[in-house]
Length: 128
Image (cartoon, rainbow, N blue to C red; front, side, top):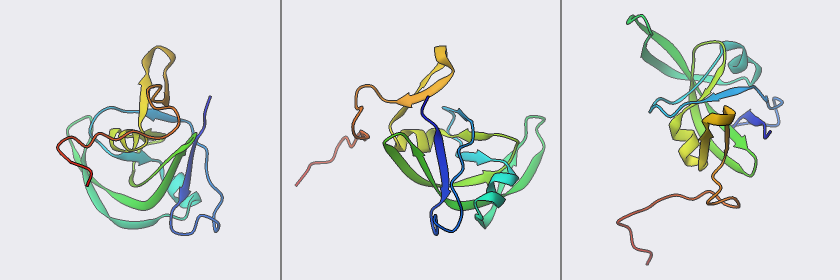
């Protein structure tokens, strides 16, 4: 199984990367992770974000970054909301790295239709 690797994008050599277990999420939300991971990676709070919790209450949480996310031969840069007790890899970073959910295996993997380089769709644009 390919590990998900997270590191601080500004000064990655200053802090060792982390390899947390992560859940993939196809909802439009962003990347989320627990407070101890933000501390471990020395991520700076960039702003506060408002979230609606499952019970309907609203809360503000820190938004930290930038975070470099690596999975196999893929990488992207993102921010993350400090929330919960596990890493949730949101739909936007997954799309950016061209990853697919494999629900039958409860895993995330590189898109088998583009195994060597991430594929992006740019309809309506002409290369010139």
